[in-house]
Length: 54
Length: 224
Length: 253
Image 1 (spheres, chains in turn brown, yellow, cyan):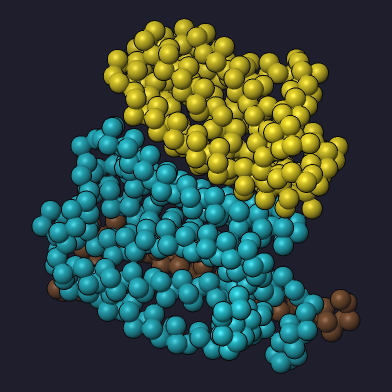
Image 2 (cartoon, chains in turn green, cyan, yellow):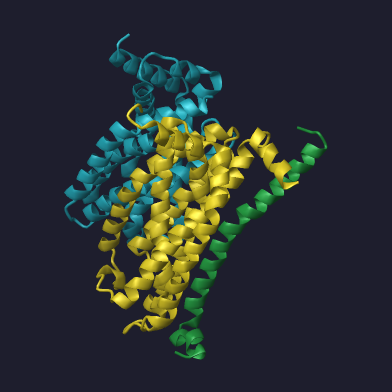
């Protein structure tokens, strides 16, 4: 299988790669959103603590 | 007071409260008829089309009417504190809840049967489907009240629980819709419907036993 | 619970405490990630490169390597949520509540993926983007069940009450899933269009089966990784002024 035929997926490139692409997007989102939000939250909490507000 | 007495006391009380607002009892009926009327207006008055759609249209409208009337199940008791009192009763909450649901169904579900012939007329549903329509209404409307009660119990404490109620309850209504409208559809073509009716009956019996428990648990959660 | 030996019940009590679970999640993360990649890469390679093209569907069938595992995960996660809901209601375990609500968006994501990839598979196969196929229809309803859980949790202000509410909802939902699936299948066979899914007769060749199974397990590991990340966030959100959170902030500073 050549690189070209790999990307072409027998003419079904759009369907196959869109499927894999959307899946990748959803999985990355569900993985990284909580990580980012957690870091944000910790930063906010640290700031609050410094200011002595609790 | 024994459990049976308590059950009927609740039913009597709720019926009495409902009759005091007699006018409101007609609202689900009007809604039912109105929604069915919208369909011919939207898809055109072709008799063949309407006849083919009739079972589905009637049943979706019944579903929506049931959904709309669900809020009244616990709303007024929640607002004036009687729900909290009910929770304090020594009797098992699930039985008392069943009493409320039964009364609610008598007032909102049962009357739909009166209106069914009118709707069959509007949509050209064949006469041979009428008995099946009544049977499905008798079996499925209590089902809708029982299943819906879980959703109401979960959302009664929320300010704008209406939309979430629909989101929670409609997926659970899908099997009821499938078998009820499927039965009427088959009856309209003269086919036997015993399978669908039996399944509806089975679902009703299952719901009678299973649904009061999560409903009671949800009420305890909501009232806190 | 007296028949559980002391060290085991101690283990569960410790694990269920937020700071210990948080630390455990951090410890497990690298191992889960390695395992995940060890399964994902051969799975993808096997599915996209090594497995032969299908006789009827050509290369479009390769969508199966994400469609089917995603569909399996969508059901698996909901059942897991119901189990966690049961544990949360019976034993009032905070951690079970946290895991439940952390799983919901991941399950919804997999359901969405199953629907979209099913649609993209269907277009070249059946010529249309959507078919009222029994499986797609049931998956759609499952998506609503997931969204209901997340919406209800968000709508209730007191999070402990919210957790109890979604525990009840998850249990009610899980009972309904087989009922819904059966009724939709019945409805679908009645109104069956001229479609036959290839997966109906699992005469699948082993060169296609192995990547499928690898991807299925890889997705499970992904779920573990993602749910732990989400749980870490939820644990902090639930008790931002707890001592262990304060220590966490100090350690980071």
